[in-house]
Image (cartoon, rainbow, N blue to C red):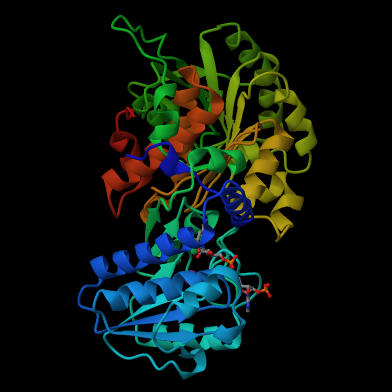
Length: 495
Ligand SMILES: NC(=O)C1=CN([C@@H]2O[C@H](COP(=O)(O)OP(=O)(O)OC[C@H]3O[C@@H](n4cnc5c(N)ncnc54)[C@H](OP(=O)(O)O)[C@@H]3O)[C@@H](O)[C@H]2O)[C@@H](O)CC1
Ligand SMILES: [K+]
């Protein structure tokens, strides 16, 4: 399990500020580069002991500097090493120039690189400083290495991956392994960057935590290390009501399955009681398929108001299969006015597509009580401007949406981002690809609802739900259907 420091994620621009602070406090930047390059060489030798030749591709900045150190260390270890440089090494500056001079071997132009079977490529072309699409010579190298399917060890990031957004600029190496320094960068976690990094190894090159924390924007990898303590301890005498009562709204008679999936997941995730709230025409369909989940008729705002008199009903899930947009908006208003907690998913989100400004003020007071769980398409309905802004990373989009909506935003995908109105954001990385299946989102909404019902703060409730959902996907295994997921939800992890 991760330590808290292991979960830190710092964007490249902030990382540059960390480097400056480290230098100001007397830490030698040349020493940092030396340790970085040595770490790369050690990792490459450990992972590829049978390499016939290590080909080190060095770029025009400090990433290239790390490459020259790695070349020297690999050579000192007895490996066969060839260095190819992008640009004239004589034009390198600062630490990179010093490390290039300390490399005793030759450095041929990158254009001369002809990959051979048995090569292991150390990609030190670009890291945090990649500012635009890869230049022509680098594109050709990416293509040639890809053609032979040579293993690549990326220094800091696979060249071509934008460390801030995870986007590919022109093209990018597909690495078997990425050795990065200090902490992860967003590009290691956000797609498609994550899929190009291979195994990510993070090396502590000696920058003290106090400097890191000064520049951390509270972006982290989603891990039990962050929220493991957020589950209120249920005492020996825990009563089902003290473990929370969750209510899930059913859709019409023709669309009841989604809500039942949410309800079942809520029960398996630890809610003491779960009630499905069903319109009258759907009662029979629901009753035929429920056992532990209770069923209650709610067929309009008056029914709901009466129900809300029961203070034990702590949290609601609205959206999966719900269908009726006007009723969705009315129910959301009632729940907000009654001070309850709400997971708004699927149709519940779409119901506010033309009037998001009618939703956001409803939950503006006090601690966050609303959790929005959109996929990209639903996100664009509530936040069209953020969805269209190509300069924003997925983390930026979720953070800005959370601040605007006063909601915890769970922006779903292979790289789900969970953001809080207070600026915290987590990137999730434990979801297997086969979790993207029909009904999977309904299950997630139910788990979030169960956590809210148990009294967890909304951000922790959502983050832990995303993680348990991912674990459930792993446990249920490839070929799962959403029906398999509730029973596969793992117990609450203790940090
Ligand atoms: N604390 C740490 O984490 C430590 C980090 N360290 C290492 O430093 C790395 C960051 O170094 P960096 O800032 O020099 O950036 P880097 O990626 O080498 O590229 C910048 C150069 O590329 C150029 N350039 C950019 N895009 C281009 C393009 N498309 N086509 C052509 N040129 C392009 C750009 O030129 P410019 O944009 O100014 O014209 C500039 O010359 C980091 O990834 C890690 O490996 C360690 O050494 C020690 C501690
Ligand atoms: K690189």
